[in-house]
Length: 316
Image (cartoon, rainbow, N blue to C red; front, top):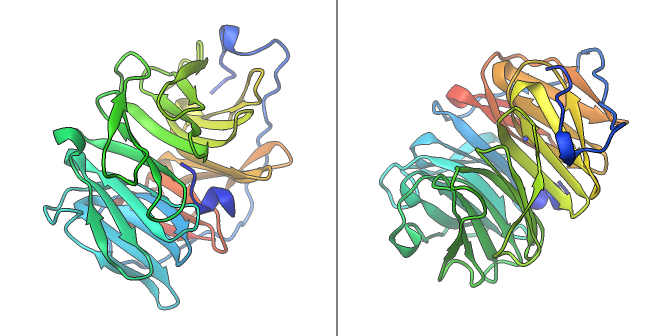
């Protein structure tokens, strides 16, 4: 997703077959150190599934349709009960390029646009009467003029070029669930599905496969920073980087990695058992955290934030 975290802002080396050229290096894994991650109190007791930065600060979305905002007084709830008031859980979030609108998606076709300045909410749920579960969202453009891309559990990507007023849909692969989606340009981005495939688009409506042959792990998170700069987080501790010519895999360990965020060569990947790995100088290094809960998402900002199961929110 192209959000403010991108603009200011998821084993033994496994063979990638034809997707990777011979000689690709694996990023080394360094030694864990006291790295400053702290658990903070929030009003959430549900699983927290995504976190992003907006013009007003960090927002996180959770089960039960909850949205919380990070304020000077701590994390505060700004929405309960979901987009339509029916309690459908929220699973993904993204913001417009100006940071003024927070778009959220979730269970049973939930899609909403939240104004971070006024607190108003527009409900765009069940596009074309679709009530499948949505796993993620990417938004590009300014508030009120956004392109919106929604990753569907049914293997479809739902897209709108008119700020959510109308949606079309495309099935980029075999019909396996689209686990994550991220855009770096108005209609250019990447998605990953449950069949270990990475897709790219430059028009927002048609997709080509660019990997990952013989990845041998599930793919859960994607950070698209350019046509030749794509990061993918997967099972078995694997992180993959695409440079436009081929894929470089790195093995961080055993934990399934659910999200990855990289900005100017530095970033994080997070996953099972409270695992956080930081990227610096091309090396992924483990960082100490105060939790063993599964982490689902991470955002880079003035304060880095990771979120996960049972209301866990970590800050650094």
